[in-house]
Image (tube, rainbow, N blue to C red; front, top):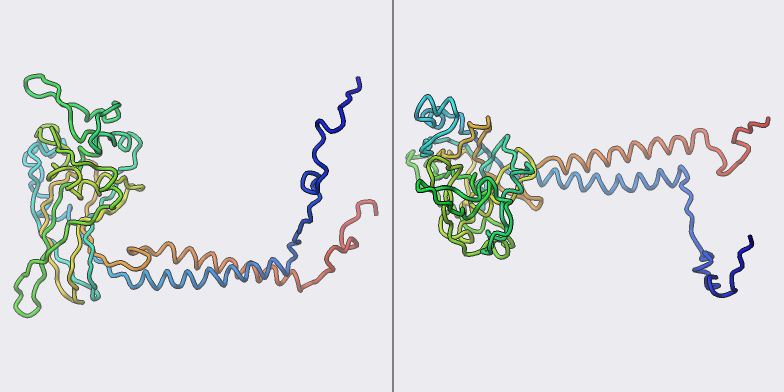
Length: 341
C-alpha cells in the first residue's frame, strides 16, 4: 500500500536548522591535544590543591574525648540495674573536667564544637520523625512524629508532645564551661562562650517559630535528651541539633570564644555529662577550633585536587610518549590492519 502525503503539510521548513545543515565544529582529540588538555587541567588543579592544603594547615584544632573519663563515666548509671539496661532513669548525669593544651596561637573567634560518633542521625526513621509544621507553629498534619507524638500521663490522658518526634526527643544536652589557667599564678579565669549566632540564620527565620514547648522530655521515665530553654526560635542549640547530620560521625557548633588563646596555654572545660552515649556505644568529644576561608579542618579537598592534578600530569606524559615515540601520520589508513590482505 502506498502512502501519499500532501506536499507542505508534514514536511519541515527548508532551512539549515531543520535540515541539520548548520556549520559544525568536530574537534579531533589527537594525542597532542589530549596531552595539552590534561596538562592544562593539572596546572589548574595542583595550585588549587596547594591553596586548600595551606588553608587547612592554618587551622588550629584541639580536642578531647570525655565520655570515657573516669569522673564522667563513673556514676552515670546510679544503679546496677540501670547500668545493665544502659538507661539512666533520673538523667542527672555526671560532671568532669578535661584539660586542653593549645598547640598554636588560636585567633578569635575560637569555635567550640561537640562531636558524636556512632550516632546515626541520618537514619531514615529518625529523619522522618519530626514535624516541620509544628516546629514553625502550625498544626501537626501527619503522624510522622511517631513514636514521640503523644505521651500518656498517670491519669491516662493523651497529651500532644511539642516539639514531637525522635529528633527533638534526643536533643543533645551536655553543657560546657570554659576557663583558662594563668601560666604565672596558676589561677583559673573563666572564659565567656557566646552561645548565640550558632544556628543558620535561614533556619531561625523560616523554620522555627515562637513555639513554647509542651510535654517535651518532662517525663522522667521516657526522657531522651534535654529540655528546651525558652521558645524554639530562642534556643539555638536545639535549632543546631535539628539540622540533620549526613554521617554517623559528626560535630555541631556549641558556642564561640571571642578572645585569642595563646600557644602552650592550658584551657580547662568543665562538662555536665548528661547525654547518654553509652546506650549505643558512642563517643563524645569537645573540640576547640579556628577556621579558614575553607571552613574547619579538613584535608580531603586539598588532597583530592592534588591527586587529580598529579594523575592529569601522569596521563599527559603517557599521551606525550605515544604522540612522539613512535609518531604516525594522523588518519593514515596504511597504519590500520587490513583483514583482506
